[in-house]
Each structure stands twice: as structure tokens, then as C-alpha cells.
Image (cartoon, rainbow, N blue to C red):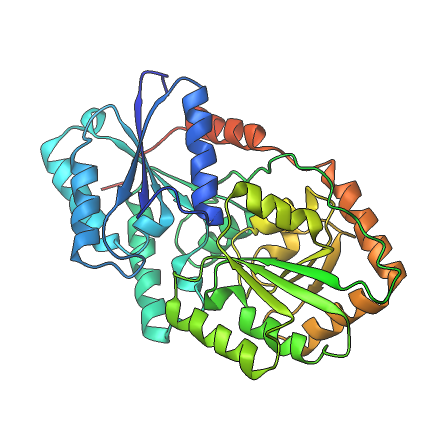
Length: 371
């Protein structure tokens, strides 16, 4: 790949969104630009991942606008539900251009869309078929974790293991590391995740209700607009469970505000049903914060050994027991905090991740699918 090759990076909606996937994409764009590439970021209009006609038209316009000497990197959220559209566009380009004249398409998959929580069987099956079809018409697939690579192969999405480029993390100062020796000190439990069903806030509330005898505050940072109905249900549940004075919802925070929340936290809690990687874990570890999380998806692989606790996804009782152990066992808190601080030194930063991404594009032979 020459530095003269134009690159188009395609994402669904506003590229400035602050979820883990969008932040990963933004860091890869920055790495490509620092390496001298001309990168255009395109945010597609329309609805994703269950696409409407506007989404189909938006992707079609972008892909047809770049038929030659262009590398098109497409975020999986903008691609996975549009298999039929992608296949039709590829057929059109094959009829109109020779292989050397066609743009190269790289799919960037954070996790399979069919694994999203809350889908019915029909929706899941439809997304599985669409994403498999879409990936079959891309020249290369990059994923953000070994777990997702294996998942794509095991589900039949791809025939061979995709290229893995795991996220990096920004260097950060240690959190306050309070000793919590005084019972009057409330344990600050921080959860950083959009208020969507997959993130497990409802399970966390069930667990917290059984811990009312302990001194804690649960702080939530995350966008409440992605699934307004679910977010409203969570707010109602907080009130119905009598937790209004114990659960603090900050909404989405900018970089500086989020750093402040991490800085005063004692432990990070990520109760997700599924994650393709779990960048919140490395962001917490970068600050020496232990993490209590689940076995959903790639989370057990992302959490360094000795730096936190893992419970079964969706198991409120197991989560409650882990949180109680954290609150009551000073030796456990000390051990996990030391483990997080030790693991902090081995984290890769975003510049390393960006270079790995560039290397994946530069040194992989981008073979076109057999037509």
C-alpha cells in the first residue's frame, strides 16, 4: 500500500460518537494520517444495523464513488446488515471495471452483529446471513480480538482466521487508590457503558439491590440516547428499587470528565452480556483500577489475570457476591489493586495498535474473493 493511495474510512452515523468502536476507528484514522496517508472519513446516513433504504443508498453511493486506487475500510456496523447490497455493488463493479481498477474493501469487525443482546431468532439469523455475505465480498477482514476472529470462523462467516489488531490505550495517571479502611467511606463503583441491553445495567441493579446494607455508590457513565426505551426502564428500576441516592447517572462524558470519574473510582464494573473486546477494561487497568466483569465474549481474555473478578454473564447473584467480596474483604481489594497496577505496565498504547493496523494493510496480500 503506497502512501499515495487514498483511503476512505466508512462508519455508520456521526464519526465523533464516543463508544469503544468509534474511538477505535478514530485512533486508526489518526495513525494512518500520521503515516502520511490521505484519509477521508465518511459517516453514513440511515439506520444501522437493521438498515433502512437510506442506509443502503448511503453505502452504495460511497462504494460506487471510489472504483479505483482507493482502499475502503468499512466498520462492521455499517457493513454487516447490508450483505445483499454489498454483493450487488460488487457485481456491478465487476461488470464495469477490471480487477486492477476496483477499490479494495477491508471490513473492520468489532463483533458479529448477530451476537447483539435482545435480538429475536429471526433477526439474529437474518444478520448472520447478511454479515456472512458482506464479508465474503470484502478483500480482507480485520477484527479487534482473537475471540472475534475465532467467532467469525466458527460461525462460518469467513473461511480463514481474520487479521487481529487489538485496541491500544491512552497513558493515564493512577486513580486515587483509596485504602477504604474507614467504614464511613463509600466504595465508588464505576460503570462506563452506553445504556443498552447488552451492557447489563439491569443485572447490575439486581445485584446492587441485595447490597443495600453496604456503603457504596454506583456511578454510571454512558449515552442514554441509543436505546431511549431501555434507558427509561433503567431509570424507573433505579427508583422502584430505592436506589436513587446510591446510583448516579452522569450521561455521556467527554475525555476530561471521564478521566475525572476514573480518577476517583475504586473499582470498575462491566456487567456486559457480550463484548468483542472490552476497551473499558484496559482503560481501567491503565489507571490501576481492578475490574469486576463477566465471561461474556472476549471479556475474560481482555482482563489480565489477577486484576479483577469474572462472573457468569447475566448472573445477578454471582455479581452481587463478587461486589460484596470487594466491599468487605480488604485483602482482596489490595490484591486486585496490586494486580491491576502490575498489569498496567504491559498495556499497549494506541500508537502501537495503529502501527499494527497499518502493517496489516501494508503486508497482507489483499486477494479479491473468487467470483
